[in-house]
Image 1: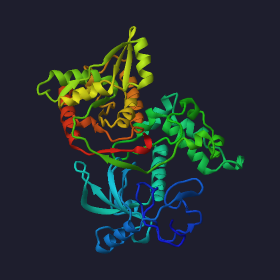
Image 2: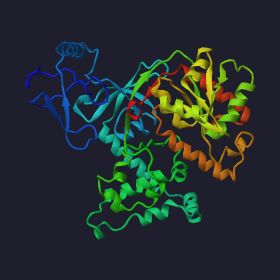
Image 3: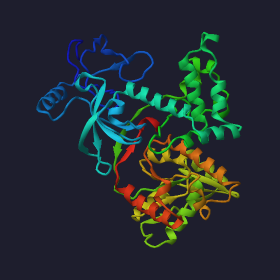
Image 4: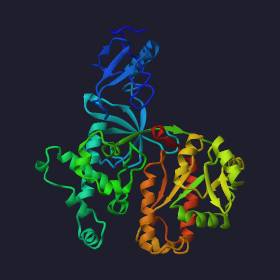
Length: 445
């Protein structure tokens, strides 16, 4: 056992990774525990970390730092959940939302900055460009500021929408900002939290306000999805209680820990919005040069067979058809991969976590839908009540994309001009994504 005054080389439980060096100045307590104050990451209360001394690793760490091989004991990868713009955000590295970087030092030059390296999207190795990003606590403040700008953004077009829409954010904001002096329990923070929760719940307004350059990724840390009516009728008094379910439902996470995964087999493909999947799959298979793709043939089971097998091992995806069930299993997907082909799935995003848990890493193709390109999809999209309704339903899927624990490929509206062009772009993107490193958020599995 390591005594209290012995140096701690590497912790078994790291901040983001399994091996993180103990920062100078932390005191070791008795009973083989030490107490770490939550100064770098957002935690509630004190965190007790059990440690185990590893002198060989500690000496290697000291040697590598002295030789310049390492700059610190930190080494982990993060997915950035907001756009950070270099010097305007008081750092030297500019990154976009969903970019993955390698963190090399969380106390670079003794400041609240992280030294990071860009990561090659194909090999997963560090690139030559390095720079600093704000620490986790500072990045969380930046995320709050960016959300606040989105919440309060004005403009003639939006004001017109607010006046003509029954469900408008402007009314909510007025109703949600009473005088804090009228209730001693309220604070500006609780009122702002109320506005954020309402902003997140209104997907049709939220994604209309964001473009690709300013997108932020908001992750629910509490329940997977809170009732929409609960958020729309939320009062500042509800958010004032830090122990309430609503207060804990939104944890603003600027950086998400990710781990690299690599596979040589052809990865299955999921399309979103799901309403476009069937037509896209058919057109890919009917066009030339479709040798790299195939559909996943489901198993057809009776109701009794379905419930029996579902209890043994849940299906990745299924749908009820008349008196039977069409089910997709791991074996169905692997059978297509064994042929050296991509398995094209007509499945919901909800199956992504099940695939990742089984070490199947899907390619997710997101066709971004907006008012500018929805008319070009008349031959692809199913009949809907209105184009406006179809765009709104697609934006709801955009929100679901934020919760999946891996990256996805997004096709911007200007990337294609028509249906045939869209299919060509989709095929090229699938082949490109196959070459890339897969990054998985284990915390969301």
